[in-house]
Amino acid sequence: MIDIESWATLPPLERDLIIEKEIMGYPGAYTTDLNAAYLVVDEMIRLGCFVSIFQGPSTEKTCSIWDADKPAHLSKQVGKTVPEAICLAAIQFFRKHK
Image (cartoon, rainbow, N blue to C red; front, side, top):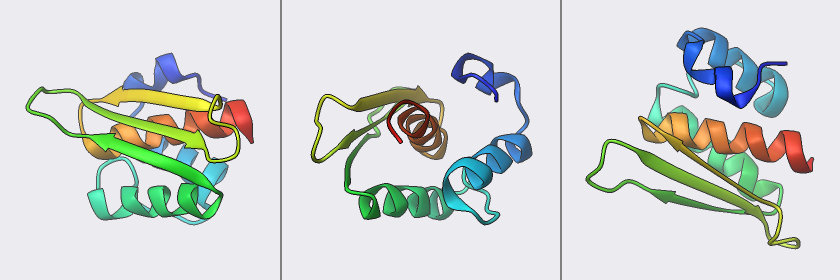
């Protein structure tokens, strides 16, 4: 299992395989394609989570995911792109709370 700190060293295909295996169950370009990344958001919402995405003028994008029933179960990650931030936060959330 790859740790969050090693994520940046992986090529996009390997990152996508992690999302496929641990969250989605089917292949997709989750870490590079915004539409595919929003499928991850949809899955988190389906599981009862709230998702907040901040895409400001900086080069870093932020995604926060928390359990609607347990707000203390929060995962917040920063990525260079919105899909990367979404996937990082989702992986962190799943590994900690599911």
